[in-house]
Amino acid sequence: MDLNFTDEQTGFRDEVRAFLDRELPPRLSEKVSRGKRLTKADYEEWHAILNARGWLGVTWPKEHGGTGWDAVRRHIFEEETTRAHAPRILPFGLAMLGPVLMKFGSDAQKSHYLPRILNGDDWWCQGYSEPGAGSDLANVQTTAERSGDHYIVNGQKTWTTLGQYANKIFCLVRTSREGKPQQGISFLLIDMDSPGIEVRPIVLIDGEPEVNEVWFTNVKVPVSNLVGEENRGWTYAKYLLTHERTNIAGVGYAQAGLTTLKRIAGEQMQGGAPLMSNPFFAAKVAQVEIDLMAMATTNLRTIAAASNGQAPGAESSMLKIKGTVIRQQINALARQAVGPYAAPFVSEALEDGSNVEPVGPDYALPASQAYFNNRKLSIYGGSNEVQRQIISKAILEL
Ligand SMILES: Cc1cc2nc3c(=O)[nH]c(=O)nc-3n(C[C@H](O)[C@H](O)[C@H](O)COP(=O)(O)OP(=O)(O)OC[C@H]3O[C@@H](n4cnc5c(N)ncnc54)[C@H](O)[C@@H]3O)c2cc1C
Image 1 (cartoon, helix red, strand yellow):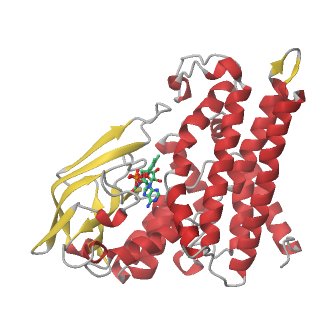
Image 2 (cartoon, rainbow, N blue to C red):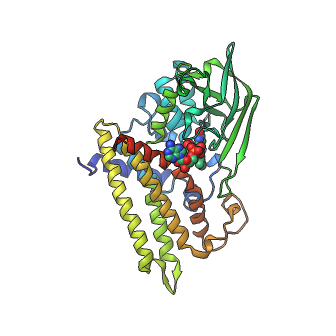
Image 3 (cartoon, protein in one colour):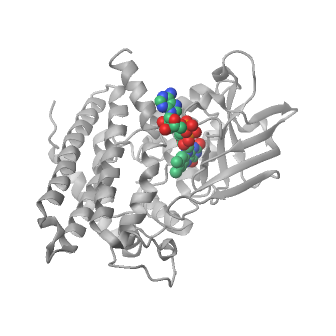
């Protein structure tokens, strides 16, 4: 297995770097590097820049307007965009719904929705989780009852990321109570401006209303918005989750976080010397860097195997666990490094146009923000405990 990049791949890296130097607005990279909150308009601006270059559908085949990139190119692209502090590409339409529609959607759904995702005409959110259906997703209780040409939807979704900006939501709904719970689930596309939908914000520990509850009361949804067949939604839901977990290791994000951590520890003084010269602190940074290098190699091995046509199995669960734990360790060290400045967390100072002054040096507030916000990493996309269950079944056959 060759883990070195070919000349062609190195050339692609240069091309991405040149593109980012030229096209990534400094205003956006500055916001990302300083941990400022991105607005809806910020995300839309970056998506449009990538789309104009043909680089928005990074996991999509060319026939649907995607890049057609293999896993190695996607990896290089992620490394370069995170290094340059580009906004992330939001996954809901592009990495989640798009692949499901390509595989299971009707021709009408493909030709209507896929170009709209690329063009930014629709902002999708993911309506999977409910208060009693997270890890146990098959326990979905939101119902969709057939009434002529429509379904009538009632129930509640929760943790709906950026649902406050969305004009569309793809939902898992219960259409039957016969048989196993998995056999009565359908996959439905719903307009967020339909009468009977209410979005209620949930404010997270970092003060950001990043997630929401979405309530449905007698919401009328045309039957033509059903993806695939009724009661086959579990198959489509699982297919979507395999796409949600691609690039789950987040190597690029961890590397960017490590660079920031080293910068903070190089600037923050302790007893008249930079914190990084404290051997105890330096040892902690070195340990997390070693773990990251080991994980990055495992990630490359998985990518190399994927390029040779092998589907990743339990490796993606290992990468999910290691990747998220390493990112959280980096966040914890950065917060530790800023010392007392980590305590006065002034959430409002992260908002666009806020005139509230953060306390301490420039890097203190983003360090705390990243620490709080990234608690989510080990929960969503399948919690780390659940990933360990997958590993114990797949590898240890327990
Ligand atoms: C910030 C954030 C954003 C999210 N965005 C979205 C979104 O946009 N759309 C969406 O649909 N969902 C979203 N989610 C929901 C996410 O997918 C769920 O939180 C996740 O699946 C866990 O479900 P839960 O919260 O109900 O916890 P539970 O499933 O109730 O788990 C509680 C605890 O029990 C553990 N546990 C559960 N089952 C097992 C088991 N079998 N073995 C061992 N331990 C177990 C879990 O690991 C966890 O520690 C988001 C979550 C967060 C935190």
